[in-house]
Image (cartoon, rainbow, N blue to C red; front, side):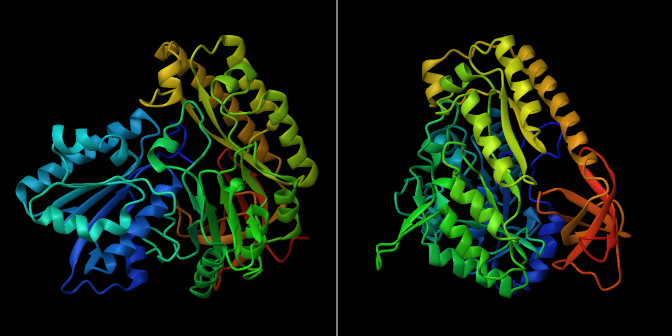
Length: 479
């Protein structure tokens, strides 16, 4: 879910142009309201959380702005998964601090994972923030603002075992009006040794299935045509209906959302290999509006390294799972996360990761070198003993391998026709439209009068790069 891959467009501050478009769509009346400015970093869950925060703020006389200089409240939703992400946040906080020195009434708050992990340092040592708010404390934001306005430091990083924000309708800050995220669960019970998420987001808990369906229905009625079901590990979703004692698993939930309307596309992220089931795959195959795309992080292609990572599977087991996916859904695209230079990784073990990429033929991957995170099991148990230059060299080899696989993967689509959900204009030309197919690949094609974002079109691929497919509009899948 997280992307700081140097070969791809970096995750950065919420794009101001898209924010502006979204705010215009929301038609918010800012007269007489204080204004808040929010930036989000890291995984899709953080961007989804920012929409929950925006909704809470909108109930207490705040409205969003894209101009931080005019904001009364500046918030940054943070990520602790890699050191680079934390460094970026600190740089932004120093910029906010300059604004605060010019306008002392401005309040600055840190949200999310970094807030929980570095609460004392951010607030008391570095003194860059007025509020520190953990991912389960967003309902307390109005109280924390009042505390900060009184001149006191406001902090709540309590981790809940119940909070899912199921009753809060997110304010779609960066939406294009076509696609939206729906958070279906929070937290994580998988103790991968390299990962800080279980410590910053708490234990796993699943949201009421009916509230998820209701949110999807509302989005469809408002013109959205694609939802992504979000969770740290969506395949372990489980909710017990207290009225009927009927258990709802992830396959059941996907079916419930798919039945909202056949024109509402369903995506999901992220899957843990140990939990994805044949039932999920057969549900995907059953419904045309459930996309044929699975993000299935492998992290390493070597069994010994996977054991050190506490991934609970080995190389052969993962390969069998991939084989099962392709057997049930031959046209499925699979993407991945890959870490190079994990503790004690040898050159031969690194080569196992390269051959895993070639075996699976991932459509794309998010690729990183190992960054030790304080408090994780790996930091406590294993020395971070791979020199940085070796980590970077191995990462580049992984990137080069994946880029070639992605190129071939896309070139194999030339001549094929896909059903594409139109998202808007191409970034390069107002003469072209863009949209994604079921396999989550971006297609660019000439615009047509009357064809609008949120509508479906059939596009025949005529050319391909490693990142994009180019095509022409046709009348049907058979064209």
